[in-house]
Length: 508
Image (cartoon, rainbow, N blue to C red; front, side, top):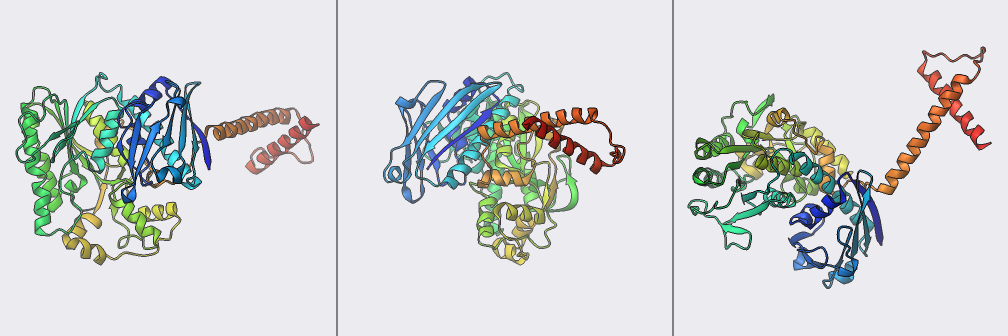
């Protein structure tokens, strides 16, 4: 089939084109709900090659066609790899045209892939590009605009991959700190014995690494959670303190700082810490950054809620459960669910990297937490699946243990992003339904031609209504059936009658 869709970007064509040339652009535009994972991005839009991994060890090699390239205005990619080439028969033309107040992007695709796959994919790309550029525009006023060099631990995790790509499309250099043989753009990092020159040439350190928290809370797992966070953070903070160039340390934390059972209390950054295991870990984790802050460096800890991403974490698991009809609320569904869209989370880390106003604890949650029951209902509605099953607390306890279930699956935290709201921070997603739709591929295409038609129809209706009102004013008042101006229904009926008369007069 073929697909041609256009959407308007409220930014200059040169800016939009430049964004597409930067590292990370392909990763930012690849939807999480299709089985493509970017491995390498083309260095040139004219004739470069982008490689994606596919299930079963297959690869999608997309070669940019020089014959379809026009600098600043058009680039084209085609799939070259057998057997994917034969199956997909893919050719994608990207057109950029100046439009009043911005840029009109038109995607023209010829392929054998089904339409359902294409519409969801391009709807995601449209939203992602517009929101990424809006964010870059907002943050450009928060610092002097000079590109930064940002070192990231945990760069291959869910948040790290997304943040790396976003920083790169913002024009910043990213150095990935890894615990294996480093590749270009990476440095080896020993968490318990980091090299003294690890942060040479680095402006900002973003520390995301840590043992995954989800799992059965036995002694060994809890020890791994603590040991992977506290001491490595302390050693990195000491390096930041000693660095002559690195001025900022951004460290991950979690809303678990507040404890798992706070009822309906609205929790801000000023709220007291809880007294359970995760609260204790978060306190020690944050305190481990003290060497950097004591040395006068800017330090922020990002207390993250449940991150919603189609690539990993809780959302794909819930999608699987709901798709099989096994989804439902936990217990009575009254527990509070403090969530955040993955792109809003990376926005916060990005802003913390460039904005000197960001320091101390930052609650990285959407402004509108929801109950577990509401979240369940919204997800079920989005997927057009039932959610009648009530999952008893015994289920999570079998999987996670009693303590793990209480502090993770059954936790109730009504957390507010007070610090960010005080800074007038703009969230992409304040409605959980919109965030789910974006991550799972349920958005609608924002087709420019369709938008124009709708706007033209609305403009015509407004003009006709205005003309009808003028005619109604000049029309003689019928004494036998006067319009009661205090009755909205009679007023509406009178206006509708005038519109009909106007249309008949025009047609005559």
